[in-house]
Every structure is written in C-alpha cells, then in structure tokens.
Image (cartoon, rainbow, N blue to C red; front, side, top):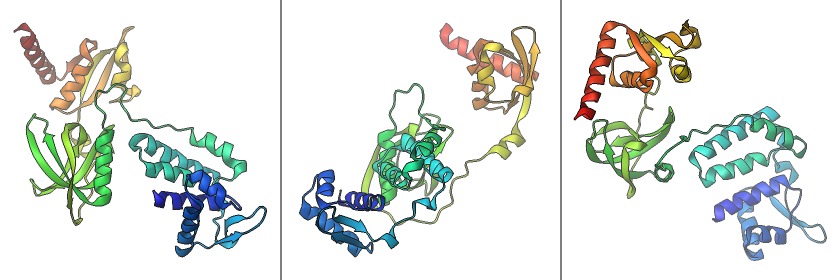
Length: 310
C-alpha cells in the first residue's frame, strides 16, 4: 500500500542521515520513478526533503525538522514497546506492526539493548490454554467496521440459548476478564448493548455506513455492587484446589484443618455463577455454612445425578 510505503520512507529518513533512491527502490521493490514520486508527495505534505548528488548522495530530511530521539526516556520507550507488543499479540493487525516499527525508530543505537531488555520484562498473553474456536477473524471484522463506521450483522445466542438475528452499529471493542466483547447500538433493541464474541455466529460487515451517535461507554466495573451483595460462606477444601480458590479470596482467609484440608471464608452471591464456582472444585470442596447454601448444593447435586441415572 502506498500510504504504508510513504510512512516507512519517512521513518527511514528520520532514522538515517541520508539514503539513496536506488536503496529505497530495492528495499520496497518498486521503480526509481515511484520513489521519486513518493519523495515529492512527502515534500507536498510539509516534510522538507532535500537531495544531494554524487558519491554518498541521496535523500535526507532537513536537520531542523528531524525528531530528537532523546524526546523519550529509556523507561518511556520501554513502556511504549511493552504496551504495543502486548496489543499486537492480542489483536494482531498491520497497523500495530507499523506502530512498533515507528517507536523503535526513536531508539538510540546505544540504548537499544537496554530498552529491548526492559520491554521484554512483561508479557501479556490472554489467549486460552485450550480452545476450539479462533476469534481472530471476528476481531478483524469488528476493527474494520469500527474504522469504516459500517454496520455489523450477526446471529446472537443469549445465556438461555435463544437465537436472534441482529444488526448493530459498532462503537467500542472491549477485553474483559479474558473475554472479548463489543459495544454497539442494536437496531432491533433500539438501544446500546454489550455483545460477547463467543455468543456470536455468522458475523458480517454490511455495506451500509452509519453516522456515529453519542453514547456512554459501558459500565465494566461492578466491584462495589458485588461487594454489597456478597456474604461469606464457610468451606472445607482439600489442599489440591488451593490455587483455584485463591482466585476468589486471599491466603489470609485460609485456616489449616488437619494435614490436608483448610477452612476458608469465601465471598459468595446466591446465583448460578457462584454455585458453579463451588461445583468447579468438585469433591475437593464442602460447603459447611450457611445451612441453606449447603442444602441448595445438595439439591443441585441430586438434579445432576438424576440426569445420569436416567
């Protein structure tokens, strides 16, 4: 793409003192005439490039227009690279690859090794250990629709298994608790909705372009509401599920009960989500108190057993 080539030429000229037209043509696999046209376009865009002839000649950006590479500190450059690398691993896309290349062009040669070391001190990979579904094609389509303000059509399955056909205006892509969502204005519901990617199928970009409307970002932090609803329940757990239980409470809440078990106070809300958490611990966990939660666990276990008895 020509725009990408122009940006790359600008970054090369910012990085180098001088470069010849032949070297640029070879690098981008285009003709000398194309390179000269690109240089003229960059000049017209307001970035002054001068050329020198003879041995050692070539193109260069006038020195007073060059970016000072010391404008960013080592820590700032490391943080930029760290963030861009993490985003690139999650969402992919040529634009992030190009952004990484641009940031790297600001790194002074004598600091490159130190900055690279610091940038690799944090790695974020939110992809699941095991998965039988690739979300990347849907992420790419949503990003394209966001950039071009185009409608998305799809089939959506709610948590009860009901399927509906939707058409919506995309406004924001959201990553929350290792799950991808996107915020959009649903034409069927006449309101904004937060759609979960894993519940979607047959996602398509429509040709119809929409005029963006004002909207509020979705509420994603329910910490205070959950804290007000939670009540502690008392569990007896086997040491083999400590790592799982630690996802929901601190180690300070554990009290040794013999050599292999612990008593734990677990924050709990009486709904399917929290009961399923208890079931995820299997036979390595027993609810001791309160009695009504213990009885509800017994009822649900009987219902599960009845399925297999039949």
